[in-house]
Length: 344
Image 1: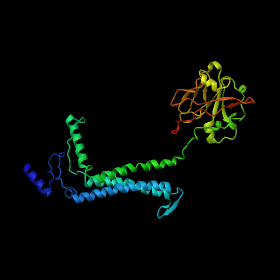
Image 2: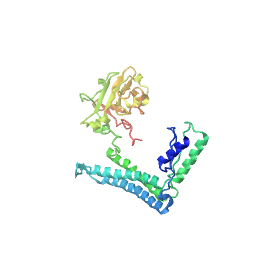
Image 3: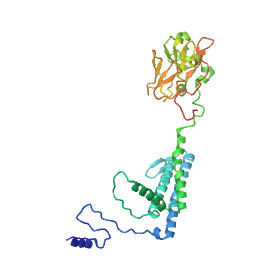
Image 4: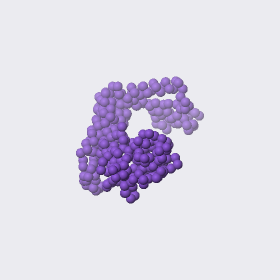
């Protein structure tokens, strides 16, 4: 009965080289005999395929260079008309086209390489427990070594050299656009309006009136602006708050030296993410940032005692001028606000 079934299966297969079906629906149907490709038996065809792969990788490198040139050379406001699309940004069109060619060059090159030159022999691996045995691990290592040899990289220098160039050049398409983040800050983030001797008088933020020491009671807090017209961008760095502490409450001689008769001036900008400060607890002299709960001790150098802030709150050295008003002696001794990559 079995022989009859096999014969019938053989006749239905018309000479197929596949294993014949059985009553078991999960039986392994087998694999056809492996057929060699032309590049496996003809070195000239293999060389031709190698040049084609290298050409695709080289095209990717050229497209990457074109991407950079377009990004730098094309006016971002330039517009041209495309049939069916209407007005299109010249820069966006050129960047999209060059980036597409760069990616496709690498992708098509790898596919062509795998189909024409890498080992194409079918491999069957039986299922095994999730945890590999020592023998299986050793076998995998050998397979990886064999795969590296089958990839023809050691022999196909033109391919791996052109691929290395394409892969090394492509990341530039992600680095060069960083220029659009804006101009380099240079020294702009290191100084504030308090560096200008003409703008060092402390003005109450709401009334813009100058402040005398007698205007401050122990435990009080006041928001301060520098004198003169203040642009919002500059105020973001120069905003200050002043508090008055009793001499016995100040636990840092360095902090006391920068103050005047117990009045201390600190930056109002949190050094973590730049949020404005203002939640002051008089009994502990703690200043809380409302954004991420960084907490600073204003009686001890503005030290961070809790939260994600990595730096103490910068203190502004103050004194009084000849008219008895509070003024800044100089700019902050360090950059204010959140840390930035040029700081150091």
